[in-house]
Length: 263
Image (cartoon, rainbow, N blue to C red; front, side, top):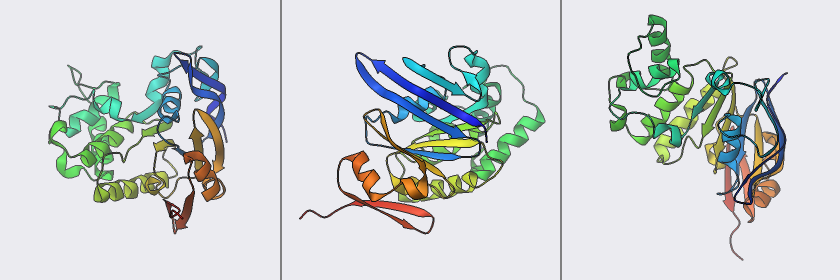
């Protein structure tokens, strides 16, 4: 297996505060990672380094075999798919769902005067179908529900045929039905052997889809634990991560966590 992502002693410091503190971590080809941690742990900062949109203050970051600082990031970024609320805010609300996904073929957020090949449209439709959006191709992006927007973003992130897929809290803001639908679809994607390596940020173990293989626990910018999900995601490790007693249970291919009752 080759390294898709390799961070060595990476720190990100802003205004004298370490958002990431000497993080060393690697992701191999075919792995599906979940990053868990409380608010302010540095999860999104870590994902921004992995996406090449944020450079380390110290340490080295190598993404898809290219070292940040010695590679043209505009050539690297099309190889990385990303879905996040920050990116969603840049997508035109008046664009249709199909147009929103198609623009990713050119690395753009909005259509201009470009024309799309028939193969581009077929791929966009296929990704949208995979995510249950085939009936909404002509709907305006701004009229979609939160769950529909999330699924459109994920379809969009796959358009460039990425080698690494980054998902920043894809289930945030969804109701129970929307979350379960998204987890089911992410599970199908995670179990696809032809899908890219994946990294997903979340606060909740209930949002971990079947097929995810590894977990990274982050607290105050430091890595507490990283490894195969079956052995790393334990009551002790999650309690340490979130700073309170928690019980982690696995039921089939899903996870739950709850606090211990007050004595």
